[in-house]
Image (cartoon, rainbow, N blue to C red; front, side, top):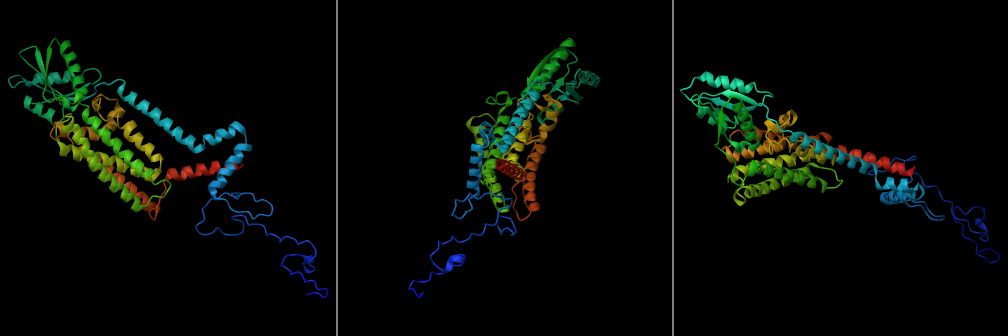
Length: 443
């Protein structure tokens, strides 16, 4: 108490020189300026890298500035830039971000590649070096077959690759093991020769061989009889059921892998997570390939009822597509889906030998077709359904190779990155584009 009985004002730190009399106006405590992130102090452990400065909302006078959530700060900044930065151009920049532009550009390139690939492969199917056999009856001189084969190999454009076999039985065996697409038996006593076909190996190829030989026989003043010893089934029009079955399996495989990868959102891929996805793909492959074989076989009678053979091939096709797509997404993120479409759909479908056999396609498509899953799968299904599994060893190795490559690339990528965490090349590219876009909105 003072001597006048007036209580002394309590002095608070920072009140300044008038703090002792208690009668002057009370001064607000001085505020120390908030330190900006990254200025003079190391960032806390666990803090997100590359945090943009100025992400705090502007404080009103007398209020303490509080850090805003990154999403709110980003939205506020974009709203402010749209309001003050510039009308139509600002709205356009917000509506079509650099990330969206790059993704749409990629889709446009895939679209053009799809058009070019399908039209390029199918616009002018022409036979080239189609294997055929030539023989004569046992009583005829072998020189007749040799001379005929030489004449066929000299045809303009090299449509056929004719070889001589000793007898008709050997030529028919080559048809059944799919090493030949036709057997021409020359008659030394009449003007009518005979062509044997197995059109289940490819109706378009069989038709092309028939047309080429019919023209050659006509020019020589002879006639051609035709026998198809192994045609497609009555429910397999033009022999396309194997192709459509494999395309369905392929679509299911890479779409399932894509959805499993996208379902995790932006979370990092881990060894445990990817193992679960691959196991789920294996179960999915076993179930869906069985139903595909049942639809093509006993339910619609499009293919002979070799359920277990088709089922085994289907498991390989579906899992190969899924595992390889998983590897592409592990290495490249969402861009991996586009790469899978490029390989399996844009390049793989037209070169699969479905509508037109490999011998009728241009060189590029005929060269890649047997080594891509759609082509290997189609050829394997035809071999299993009609030819008692003849000639499918290479196809199974190709499908198994894609499945194994998918596993090796997936786990190898994760292990090389370290600690089993990897967001993919595309994720890093998108992060960089998003960061650039964010910085440009501040300027």
